[in-house]
Image 1 (tube, rainbow, N blue to C red):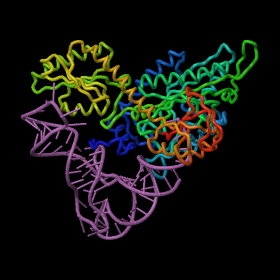
Image 2 (image 1 turned 180 degrees about the horizontal axis):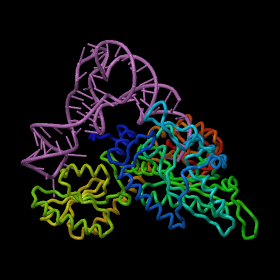
Image 3 (image 1 turned 180 degrees about the vertical axis):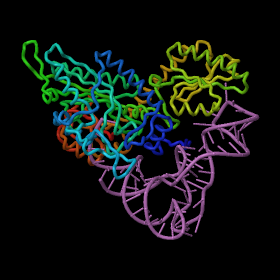
Image 4 (image 1 turned 135 degrees about the horizontal axis):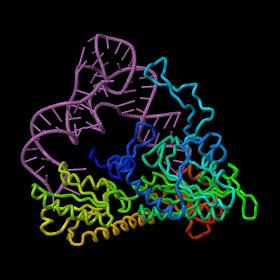
Length: 492
RNA sequence: CGGGGUGUAGCGUAGCCCGGUAUCGCGCCACAUUUGGGAUGUGGAGGUCGUAGGUUCGAAUCCUGCCACCCCGACCA
């Protein structure tokens, strides 16, 4: 391992890549653009999955699984959706290899094994799902359908970055079908709220809920909503999206139902998703120059116990106390690791667990045992204190709660300090470069202005915030009237 | 797809301009001393120098092709 610590202020991008590697979260694979998610990184993703899955089920959804491959004819059925994804699709054209007659030991694609119809590796599953829903829906009694699937998808990206943008990524995609427009819209907004709550309470990342502009809308949607987070380098990250699909897919796949009055109508749809990109958000929102900082809720290991000793006698003495504490903490449903390896020194372990973002470290040495106390170090503030062993199993959960709040509050105040309201284009450009962050500005509502600003500054409209006060003004670029301020930022 | 860069032990690298069979650090193995913030010493193992070809008595080094990955742009969750 290279111990050169890259600071965020030196090179944010390099800091991120090193952290992902050094904290054992993921690494590049032999496949271009695809990553290997390592056990520690995957454990964090699993915790995200568990919590999201619980929230989806609590809002009435069930899980199912649809195929990885989408026949081209189905894929192209919803025109806008197909067009939107066409440039980044992987395509299966053959189903067999054979030994190269000219080069033994090598394989070639068997030209005789060409598929009659190409298969698209799903970049998203609307097509295959709506083709299936068609068979499931005849009457209003069959609605709503509230299904989620956990899956991998492939989008052939030119440039990739670990977790933030990879050719293959893991995600969940919800696909729902409704009898009315109102119900579908309500579902869209409900799932946006679920995502926002998840991001804020579980990942401790404050987010802004908003609506996407037409330019940024999901291909095939009538309306796209998102949650946007702000990273420590001042760039925005889209952390989740929820789409109101109108009747677009129902029309493309001819999914109609008979209402109570016997009249037939097309079904209303939504889809919503979050991906392993959230891992990137988690890393970039909280971590520092010493490594990962994980909110206690998401940490695979919440408390690590490190014994300190010289002799076998001392080890026995310390070990008994450590095991007792571990047992007591586990009874409180905490995830505790007792690292009693003799192959590494305590100082080495301290650094290791800081790098990996373990929220609380408990060090126990002979002196502590004599004094009936332990040394507690918290990762978020790096403070150390000596705590009495008495009732420790209740003090630790309390401390973890405080840490969760502290980590959120820190991210929140950073975010709030980095929303800059501007009234002129020159001020806009200045703020965008200097502190960065979200720039709140008036916009005339046209895609043309949006594109011009993007070309000139690289900032995009992240969203039209939902909870903002309506304030009329004039567009910073065109001077035309504007109904509301929108949030611009440079984004990942 | 355009521009730049890198491929040498598990990881990070020196050597390349100026050709003579590979350097150093981390890690790994053994033993000893160590253990309250990344221990020290001694000994040891590990390499078809990305790949294919060419030049040469001889190639990590020079030449040509190919491949892979990273970074910067255009495209995107």
